[in-house]
Each structure stands twice: as C-alpha cells, then as structure tokens.
Length: 283
Image 1 (spheres, helix red, strand yellow):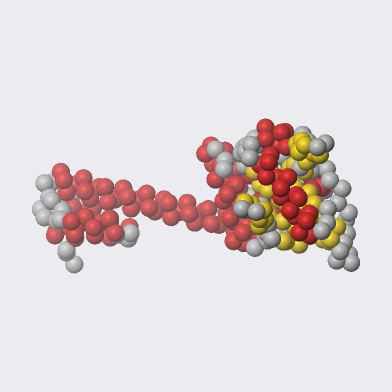
Image 2: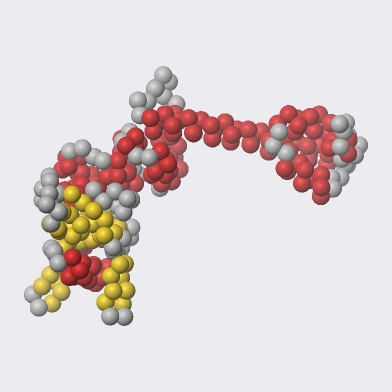
C-alpha cells in the first residue's frame, strides 16, 4: 500500500504527532539494506522532499503485526543505513498493530555510549486519534484504522468503506475484503447486513453501490448452489431407497450438473426409476 501511495506516510507521521510541513512531498525509495554479511529489508522507504526537490528527511516504514524482540535491534540499523545512503536525517515509522509492542517502541531504546534510538510509532491509540490529528482521513489511513479498530467499533469499517471511491475499484474491494476477513464472524455479518439490508438505503458512494451489488450477486449464487446441492442429495437418496445403483460416470455427471432445471427433472425421474439410465440417459 505504501509503495503505491507513499503520501500516506505524511498522514501517519502526523497521526503519530510528528511535525510535517504542508509543502512536503513523498516519494518511494528502496528498502533493501545490506551490512557486511547480514541483509535487512524494511517494508518501505519514503523520501520526503521540499518544493525545491531537496531531501527534507527519509522515513523507513515497518508494519509490525505482532511483538518481535528482534526488531528492537534491527530498527536502529534501518535508520543508520538509510541515513548514510541518502545523506539526510532519517526516522523509522513503525505501524504496530500489537498495542503492547507499540508501548515498548514508544520508549527510547538504549544503544550504548549514551546514544538512544527512538521510533515514530503509530499504534491503536494513534489510529484512534487520527481524525482529530490529521483532519481529512485518506482511504489508505481509513483502511488501516478499520483493519485495527474494526473489531471494537464496526462504525470505523463503514466509515472506511465510504472513503474507498478514491481508490481503483479492484483495490477498494481488496481493502474491504481484507477488513471484513479480519473481523469475527458475527461482526462481519453485522457489517455486511448494515450495508446491504437497510430498507430504502441508496448509498452515495460508488464503491458501496458496487459492493452491495457484488454481495447481492454472491448471495443469489450461494442460494442457487445450495439448491443444486439439495437436489443432488435428493436424487441420490431416492435412488438408494429404490435400490438403484449409480455408476462412477453417473455420479460424476450428477456432481458436475449445475442446471437447476435438469436437476429437478432428474429428481422427478428418480421417483419412478428402476435403473440409473432411467434418470440420466432419457432424452
């Protein structure tokens, strides 16, 4: 996400309380670092430039989904190498989805000799406060907020969905699918029901309209597949009760059939069939 839209880093820095001038622009850079025999790869690196194109600072971005003690030792390396490579001030922005680990990262990490490393951290608290700190929430920040906060507040998911018109349709649907997949089953059903089943609700958002149409179509197809499965089961049950044996080819043909009308016809034939051919081979 950050590689495709590096500008989201500006919003995350502001959400973390960092001072980022309004005129600063963001551009991606390589996140691969090498030190002697050790290789390190950060999730992303974004270069912030002023109006004249001069580097104002470099931001190494690391998304941390769970606690990792190793990161307490590798994050300072990212900062040092990026600073040397770009010959500019560098900071490490950590999007920490585990709040306990985020708390650890907010504390200075001693490096020895009086030096310390301090990460810029965006955790649950910063994402929760993002609307107040940065004003307008972009689709990418809304996606991160919903991914992290959606479990405790379904309204954050609905708010995020309403920002997705700014994204290409495929990415918008991907973001939303990732959000709802991270929700508990009951909450996911509640969110989808809220979007789809409000009587008379006509969403202004093009993304929401597309989502609702897609889910309605999926729901209709799921219903049809359930109907097909029931009809196949009825054919099998009736033939077994009549002592009729199906060949492997008959079973394969039954399982492969997706035409509800044909399956219904086979059920009707099975009621009086004495052989499997009476069901499957009649014209």
